[in-house]
Image 1: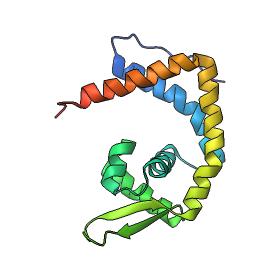
Image 2 (image 1 turned 180 degrees about the vertical axis):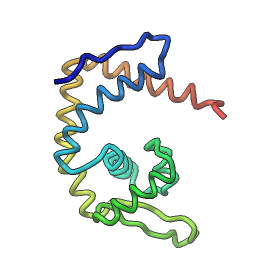
Image 3 (image 1 turned 45 degrees about the vertical axis):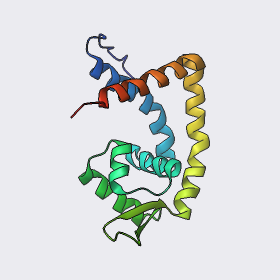
Length: 149
C-alpha cells in the first residue's frame, strides 16, 4: 500500500524536483532490484555504457555522486566483475574505468526492462510531454550551471 504523495507547491521547486525524481525512481528501482542493482550502480553502468571509458571524476560529475561514495561503489562493482580499470599510458595518474564484458552483458540484459519503464512513462505522460520535459530540464541544468560557482 502506498500513500498518496503530497505534491509541493511550485514555489518550492527543489522539493518538487526531488518528489518527481522519487516518483520516477520507484518505477526504475523495481527493475534494478530484479537484476541485483542499486540506483548508484545503474547510474555508473549506464554512464559508462553511453560514454565509454571515463575517469572517476567524470563518473562522479555525470552521475551526481560524491567522490567518497563513488570510490566504494566502483570498488564493489569492480569486485563483482562489472568494471575494469586501466592506467593511462601517457599520464600514469589517470585511471580509466570501463565496462568489463560481464558489465556490458549486464547492461544489455537490463536495458529492455528499463525501456519498458520509459515506455510506460511515455504512455502515462504522453510522448510530447516527456520530450518537452527533457528539453526544459536540460535547459534548466545548463542555465543554472552557467556561473554557479
